[in-house]
Amino acid sequence: MSRPEGMHEQEFNNLIKVHLSVLFSLSYSFFIGSRIPKGKLRFLSLSPVFFVFILLPLKLSSVFPTGLIALFITWLSTLKLVLFSFDLGPLSSHQSKSLQNFLLISCLPIKTSQSPKKTPKLPLNSPLKSLLFVLLLPTLNQKQNLHPILLLAIYCCLLYLLVDVVSGICNSFTKAVFGMELEMPSDEPYLSTSLQDFWGRRWNLTVTSLLRDAVYTPLRSICGPLLGRTVGVVAAFVVSGLMHELIFYYVTREAPTWEVTWFFVLHGVSVVVESRVKKLLGRPKWGVCSVVYGPMMVAFVIVTAHWWFFPPVVRNGADEKAAKEIMSLLEWMMGKAGLTSLHG
Image: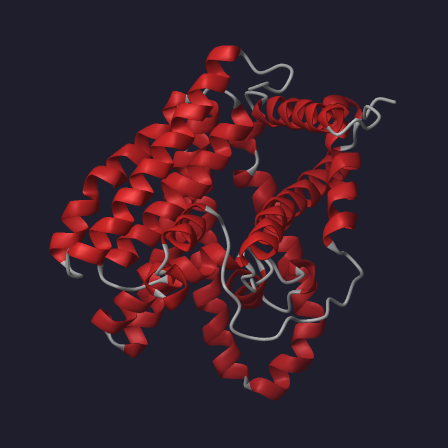
């Protein structure tokens, strides 16, 4: 089997081993679910899989594959399996009753659709997003020549496009091969009317849904509707921050700085405060305020990301390494397809 140019043979072999480990672990989880009833016993039976998933990213050294495995498997798959232990979440739906569907829903950032698709307000379809991503990616090699504000805008665009392009590829593959109707990963987050709207209904919806099921809903049930809402929201953001911290460790192999955790803690507290203000103002007044407030909150996300989200992966050049790896992968794919090189 050939490998992309720039990827060492050992790294390529390790990547194959990681994928085989994921396949074996998820197959084991599927058969465990059919033989052990939901609850603590099923959770304990799956605990070896959780341990394996924590170790898998450490088997790799390339930035981009490590980040994908950490996000897809160490975080999302583990969270899905924890919910599955108690017969909750996407792996407990009727669409996960076959092994192939269980594997797909477990390891890919996809979410089955329960409602008709929305028509986007801006004409940004998947091919256009992919093109924009490919055009913007090489600019990271010249970032020292870019104005800081322009560079920040590029980082934000690349992050948004990366999430949507990768998830869109997973969606397209799953729909084409297995006919599943899936939700889009994001819903035009740049049009958010508030922080609550951004984090709860527009940005990275697969992650949002899992955090709601695994963290927010149980805590709200335990603590009661009033206190539980506040505790659940803040806890979901704290969990997200800690998982991002872990992913950044896998990618950089440097001790955590806790910047990204504080980024999510700040936004969790801000969402709680914002929801209280909404109640005090009432819907009519808030509707008028949101016209100005929405863009301000998108700017707030961008500025705080500049302070605490991006620095941990920018300081050691992980962003540039990832960009080179993605460009190398695209070159390899185009070569296999007999297309012209990205460099002409």
